Figure 1 (tube, rainbow, N blue to C red):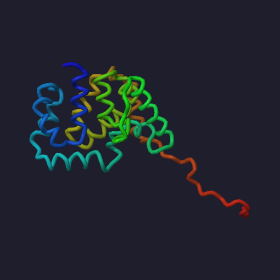
Figure 2: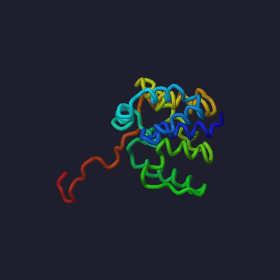
Figure 3: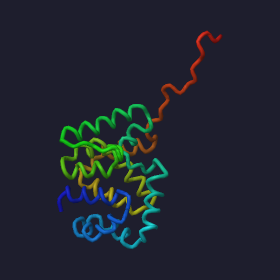
Figure 4: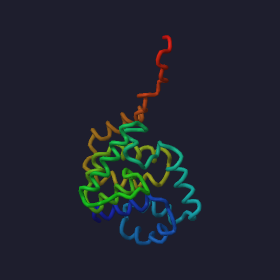
Length: 189
């Protein structure tokens, strides 16, 4: 199977599991056998439970953030520039990103990788590895989707794993600039 097919299938698996996703399960199973573990789980889980599982895994904790810039920049000011960089890469290839989702949303990056190139996946590989490790620790079948994607990338080189582990220990950066209260002009010190 080609990497492009896997990336497109992984994109669908990591998106919210709506009725359209359910309808595509047979096609996904046929096209992406590497995702069998997750697809078996999705097929065996009732739609309401699968949707609740998705929300529990991805929507309530940044520990499982599907936004790749969060893993590198956290909730800091520099994340905005990283997001602009994502949009710029899309534009370089004639693609315009809609405002429905942030441009670093992993399913969107996977779809871009399926159609154009893996530049963004490679640049944000440490974040992918951190997400994969977090999902594995959480015990969710979504981890197998990240396993399959990460296996297609060069490596796994120790440098990528070391960078992912170092980042996992300290977490994404926290904004500290400008958080001290301002003193009033003319206020005695």
